[in-house]
Length: 310
Image (tube, rainbow, N blue to C red; front, side, top):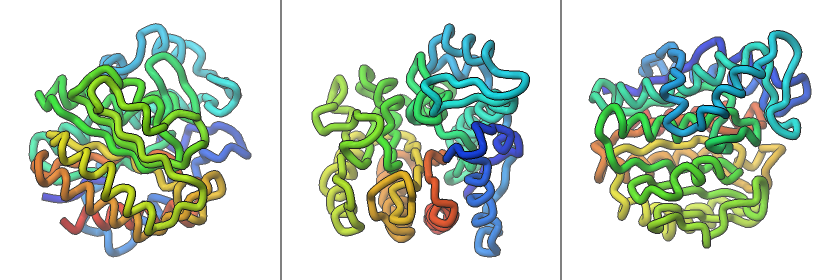
């Protein structure tokens, strides 16, 4: 079985503004890196459009209706204080994000692919049930988890997030369900202000690994090996979803951690080993943050390289 890579040109049409960090160039950097000869073994898939029914697995109906209603025909519209901006192409872009994540779950759950990486934008892990924030409109990782349960009967689903920012939206969606696990390593204190070790969910199903500024490879690997990875193995998911943000990289301009490309390869391999133990190796990864174009390209390549070399 192979690794699938999902993307769609609609994801370039989300245009939050000339100086906005979440630019279309981010996706180009990822796709340019993944078109190198070493990735000829992946299977490319066109991301389908997600459905409103999929959105409603996580998001409130009134929120979904509002996002659709305010989508501009021209110019931009800010869904929050200015971080999360819609342009005329945003609705289709975010629906491609959701569609990619859910279709990837379908393919992996059915055994037609070993794993998948969704090279789509914008990111999603800050989006809560009823609000956009932090560049995120809909939470595709959380939606994919609930889709796996609804469509494939996979009851125990984990999301592990290594973005530099804590995924408050995913935590919010999983908090009250003991069969959903959210694990995150992230810079702390930092935006969005959540992600302390005391935030543990209804049944210890939330595991946060807050990292101080300037955390390097050694400390990152030690903390993950001692805290998050054992908790993930104990939870024993039937499917693992990765919120793959690359803004903890040492080159990233928005974060202050010091991860390297090798760290992303290492953590991907560790997560795949955990999925092997309980989930028949089923892994779906979705792109989150990453704002150095150089680092985003090289780190996402390291991530997919690990997914391929099982």
